Length: 297
Image (cartoon, rainbow, N blue to C red; front, side):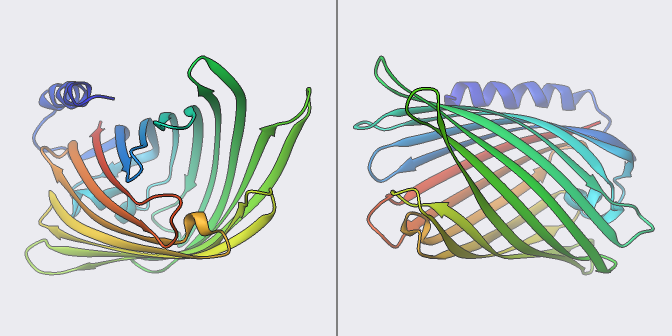
């Protein structure tokens, strides 16, 4: 998506937000649009778009601080549906066009320390080079998770993801593989004076990949993030991610800088920059810019 289309999408949601009141006591639905542009050192480019709708089972009180953590502080369960569209362009290789559809369910209650989640995502990728069509691949992700609030705003969560990938085979046959991803997630919010707060998150996990010979191998990954909330509306943060293991294509680190600003209590704009460095020559290093708009009602 070009820069003009991105500005148009922001303007549309700004117009919607303009009809909302400056102070919103509660909300039950959210709609968001996300655009990620990734440029690689080898001049290839990935453009990812996502449109998501989320519905909370109960109304979320947004008089909490900060606004970005309202659903977490309220322990508000939700369900969501999202659509994705991405295009990968390589000046010397094939072009990949991917369309996806996903669903998610999270069970949380204000008077319960338990968290349960279930997610499903399916995508199809068309592989082309010019007018030549090479076929389709299909990816399906099934996610289950269970967590526990060990303190008022401190959560531990165990997540298991099964990734089923299908490659076109000879004739009408398909090659199918199942890959596993298991991780432990930690999150806590510390509140200070003058409505300020700090959010900490960490993830440790192990993920399986297919190598060039379609053998299943695994990597370990480590992620850490922090956000400083300046009052109710503004956050500035960042993160560091590192992956190591036998699958060289994912070994390396990611450095992240991000921020979010609520123009009103119902409309926010988020920006994230990511620098990805690989320990091996391929794939090449990359820079990503993510722009996200969110509207609550």
